[in-house]
Length: 62
Image 1 (cartoon, rainbow, N blue to C red):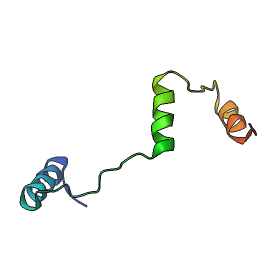
Image 2 (tube, helix red, strand yellow; image 1 turned 30 degrees about the horizontal axis):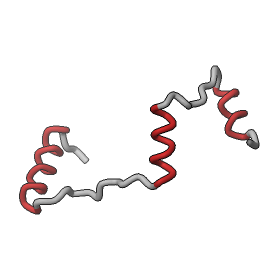
Image 3 (tube, helix red, strand yellow; image 1 turned 180 degrees about the vertical axis):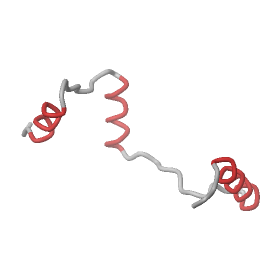
Image 4 (cartoon, rainbow, N blue to C red; image 1 turned 90 degrees about the horizontal axis):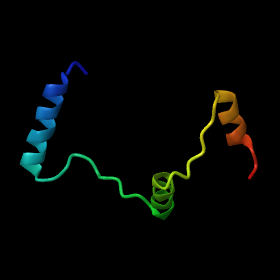
């Protein structure tokens, strides 16, 4: 687009000041996403040593 980060931020803040609203719709997580975030915070995430292990885990039927 040819904008610097500074220019883009200034434009966004100008729009926020003018419209008194964010120039985007904030995302509100649904119940499933909230539960997944809680599980991640509890350390209940799976980890994989290799990409192949990850793909196998994604393709596995639980």
